Image (cartoon, chains in turn yellow, cyan):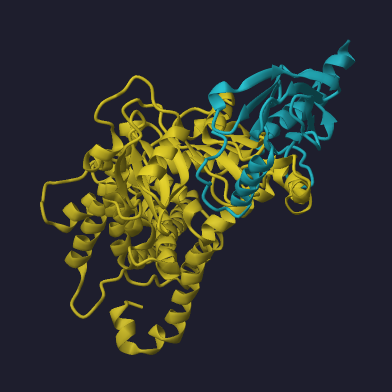
Length: 471
Length: 162
């Protein structure tokens, strides 16, 4: 064989190889696009709800600071605040039948003290002027303006397990949408800035215009959005549980009793002594003269003294013990997690039974705490809020532009889904990758299995449906 | 010489890794039977029989993980009559035996009294409080206070200890 012939043969082989690999690439693209399309069409409405409610809730401090200004700030700053115990006494005297379950002390001299109170069986929040002890107003924290958006964001307003699962599903699919979207966005031809990092506005209203308004902003917000979604997952019930388990098994979670909610220790003093101090009541009465009583619970002022001594930085919430064996709990509520502190204090002796600070957290708990602060827009102030807002508005834009793209493409009598790739191996390959994602995110995995079952059992058997779904 | 240089990485690396991992894991210390890390425990003792005009001994035992806590940074007892906290008496306590601090005090009049041991250590502080009553009326009052506390009922009219 001559050299010329060999070269020709080689070039034919290379050509067919490159054609084949282009075909494979095309099939992968097609398959990924189908998943991206279906996921988008199903979850875009939920993502718009999450983005909108999240964007509003991000600005809770500013919104509530404005709406409830008269309650949150004092009219006149006095010289020194009254002792918390005096404030509690004044409140109980002014509002008979009120019991205080917690009091939040602020370091800002203009801020009022926030008291969680129970009035005739109903829980509410009372804002009190720390200089006068007068209540500035009462507000049900579940019925504030931003609480509605929080409810929309976390349980689609309707609440319950179903809504919770939908949110989790939308969040997990949003991750898949970002990853598949990035794959579709990835420049395949000669890299250039137009259509990748800069949108082309030359033909407003065209499919290219909407495509660029979809892919380019989506690329820009992808990382922030990914962090926001992942940082929100610890709240979800299924993924959240998995994350918690992983943190526990690697000993990188928080130590026990790290929060003011959940399990609390018991006061050790009462467990040991009250029982032996009680019998006097019945036995000693016949011998008058003197008797000794049992331990007396400490007052709020004592606990404030202990919290200050332990260098807990205000603002912190002091939660009253529940029942005879309960503990006082002091927990901080700072925007940044580094000052996190939760102390459980024996209500009779004042001994600090547990004291968990941010430094005591394991690496996963630290990351989750930072993530939550970032998700809520409190980690680095206004810049964090604005970044969150850009991501939320960007997500809404991306959803709208994707809808416009779809409408532009949709042929009559069809859903307008990207055609199924001819290469079955690729379809199965991409499906396996999806199932791997599903294994990490169980709820998404379950939905993938349902889609496969639907595809095999119903869609493939009905001709009109096959045509509509481009199968 | 060479050997010592070569052998160094063998223990330096595991040490560094251990240190790094320690920084990553949660700080969980040994816990006691209640699942709590080491904490201060107290036992405030009042005399079995309290008399007027005779020195009474009040003592407190402080321990941590069942070990008596010696050499308190501050050890004092505060005694006051109900509703008269402004005239509370503060007495410096002596360490009688390791972890046992006590004071002696003479009660002059009948009434309900509060005694608080304020103890400060390097490891933390405690301030347990107990009540006692001398005289028939005071006993009735104390019974009222104690039963209100144990039944979780609102504090009686004469108020708590503050």
